[in-house]
Structures are given as structure tokens and as C-alpha cells.
Image (cartoon, helix red, strand yellow):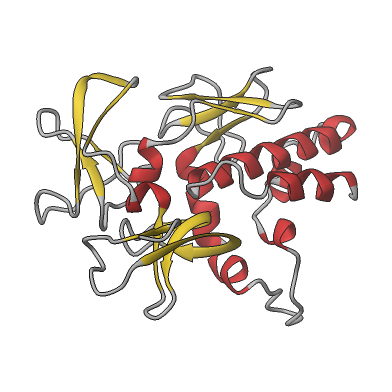
Length: 241
């Protein structure tokens, strides 16, 4: 076998090649969005997240210390199921705990506990008591919170942002002008949302928006399966604003 190639049970007719490209794709394993690292069959336009292509048969998670999650190619029943991390539907590959019934998307199961670029550090929590900058609500799904505790974003809200912006992200165009946009500006930003949320605190809005926009970029890249993707471009785009 050549370096960077694998044979995968979900696509036995062709080998899958590893590649890194900062263009969003839909994983044919878990049916979720991805970016960055993937295994791909060019002949069939078949893509897998790294976590879906090279799954661990059984995992444990620090948020569920009494659970053992088994990797399954599909949910264990026909009843609609959702991921306990992001609250989104389970439509393909999943990690399932038979004893408690919890489910995790492969990328959600592998979300980094800490995202750190040197200037900003974000920590993953199962629950936080502070409000999410996106929806304004507490609780809900897992959240990333900044070390300073000022910025909190639900994993579920980040995924909703991706769904809302899917056409623009995937095709890389501003649909109103038809012009192609750079990758870092295609990734959804919380800037507009935060300006509305904090319109009474205009003196601090700009800095807050810039920090929150940076935070959401880091979280998006992690949710999409590759926490190393996009970050360098994000910093450049913030500096140029």
C-alpha cells in the first residue's frame, strides 16, 4: 500500500487517498460537513473525515466516565437519534454507548478539550452557566468557552451557522454578486450577531466582535474535523479589518 492510501470497508471498490484541502466537503461516513484533512476517492467523489476513515473501535470520553462508546456504521435502531455533543441528527457513522444510549458523531467524539493558538485559549465543557454569544441561551449542547470566560459558543450553534451558510461556504461565492471569496471570509463569523447582541455597549463592540470572531473560527475548524485548518487565514483576516 502506498503511503497516504487506505482501503476502507465503506468504499471497497477503490483505495482512498489522504489529502489536505481547505475546501468544505460532506463526509460520506457520518454525513456531516468537513474541512482540511480527509480521505478521498476522486473517481467516485467519495470523502471521509480522518476520524471516520480511521476510527477507534471503542472509546471512552471524560464527559461520560461510566460509558463505553462503540463505533457503528449506522445508528443501532431506526428511531431518530441525535448526537449528545451537538444535538444534531445522527445520519451515518456514530459512536454509541449501549448501556446509556448516548450517541456521538465521530468528529464530536474527538473534539479537542483545548483550542490554543497562543493568543486565545478555548476550553470544551459539557455544560456552562453563561449565555452563548450566538443564541443567548444557557445550557443546551457542549460549549467552548474562552479562558477569560467572556466568550461562550455552543457546538450546536456553530453547526447551525454552518448549515445556514452552507451554500456560500461550499461554493465559495457571494450569491448576490457571483464573485468568489477567499476561504477565511467564507467561514461564518459572529460579528453581525454580536453587534446586535451588544448594541448598547458600542465602545467595546469592536474588540468583542474581533475576539469572538476569532473564537468561532477556531471552533468551526474543530467541529469540521480538523482543528489545524483555517486558523492561519483567520488571524490574517482579523488584522486586515
